[in-house]
Structure formats: C-alpha cells, structure tokens
Image (tube, rainbow, N blue to C red; front, side, top):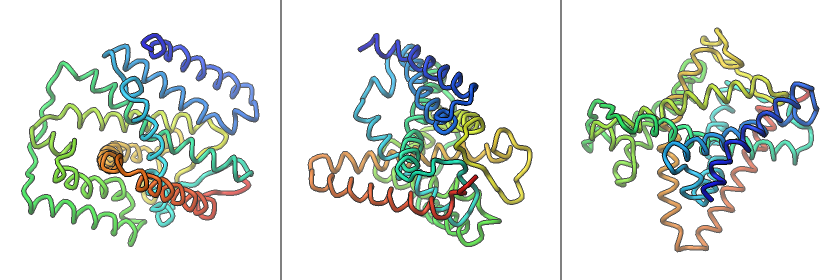
Length: 305
C-alpha cells in the first residue's frame, strides 16, 4: 500500500498531462470534462505529496473518511448553491445538454470540494509542523458564543434580504454559526485552537482555501464547461474568471467548510450504530441533492451558452 500512495504522484501527474494534452487539441470530450479530469488527479497528487512528506495522508489514513468527505461535500456545497439562487453571483455555461451527464458532472465536481480542502490543509500543516504559530485568544464565554451564533444568523439573513449589498456575508455566516456549536460539543474545532492560542491549523485551513481557490479558478478558466461570476461593486480586476476581491472569500469559506464538516462527522459517528437512521439520512441527502440539481438547472444554468 505504501508504494501505491507514493506512485499516486506519477498517476496523478500523468492524468493531468493527458487532460491538458487532449484539451490543447480541442478534443470535444475533454472540452466538456476538463475540470473534473484535471481536478481529481490533482487531489491524488496532493495526497501523494502529503504521504511522502509525513508518512500519512488523508487517503492513506482512512479511505472510508475520504469517501464520506466526498459524499457529504455535495450537499454542503449545494447549500451555497441555494443561497446563490438569491445572490446570483455565479452561473454555469456550456454544460452537457443531456440531464444524466450534466447531473453526473455536478456530483463529481461538488464532491471534490471537501477532499481538496482536506488535502491542501494537510499539506500546509506538514509545512508548519515544526513551527508554533501564535493566534490571539478568543473569549469563549456563554454570552460570547451566543453572540457569535446570533451574528452568524444575522449575516446569512442580511445576504438574503439585501444580496447586492451584503453578498460577501455568505462566506462568513456559517463560520460564526457553526464554530460555537462545535466548541460547545467539545469537537475538534478551530475556535478551541484559538482559545489555546494555537494558530497552525487555522492558518493551514486559510491557506488551503486560497490555494484551492486559485486551482479551482485556473482549471475552470480553461474548461469548456465552466462557471462565470457577476458580483456587485467588486466585479473588476479578474484573475481567470474570478474578480480579484473574490479570492478573499476562499479563506473564510475554508474555515466554514472545516466547521460544517466537523459537525457532520460528529453526526456520522453518532449514527454508526443505527443502520436505519443511516439509510434514512442517505436517502434524504440524495433527495436534497436531486432537488438542488433541478434548481441549479432552472435558475443558475445558462442554456445554449
């Protein structure tokens, strides 16, 4: 198994090279599927790099956890897609006209979000493992935690009520809402790290968000099937498809994903001894995915473009 995780670097780079080669020659299949064909091998490359650096990686530590991360990544990202129905900050273009292929593309693309952030965060944690990065201590009194949760709700409501003015609040609301929840449940939380003045993991996840964002946008820019942004009052200075200021949103987004993923992993552990509850949960998640895909098709997909 050790050899496999080390050779994944070669497999991943080879798959990326092939995808770029076929895209360069304008192969129709690769025009449509380039983002997925390049992004998942990149995750494989990151996993192999992590394994070579530290003797472990998210994939080598637990295949089951990575499968869970990919499965739950779809509904987690779809929550943001549902907010975008109101915000209208991005839209999808030149996607396959056939519904099964299009929805397969949604699933494969959205399933990569959490695994990618896990790999990038592990990479930066490996880089910083010999250093202690200080962080300002945050108060965690009952009233403070309640205040942060209330602020999270307020931010999310504001971005829905006045989307043209407060759309950036989407990338902060879940952080303030979920961080205190995880702390109170004594889960593995970034708020607990801050309370101990330990900034390594916080910085690692912030940089993971930025690094993943740059790669997301770079691969999207060259893909035939892609997304485009329309952002009020900050819609300038583009790097790839993303306006410059938009890259700032990737940093808190990664912290939001960490908080949500931590909480969902806790629920998963609670449900492990209850197969009926697991089956019902999976069915509900799949139903949510399907409904959300339909709404994306209806309101976010630009057809014939």
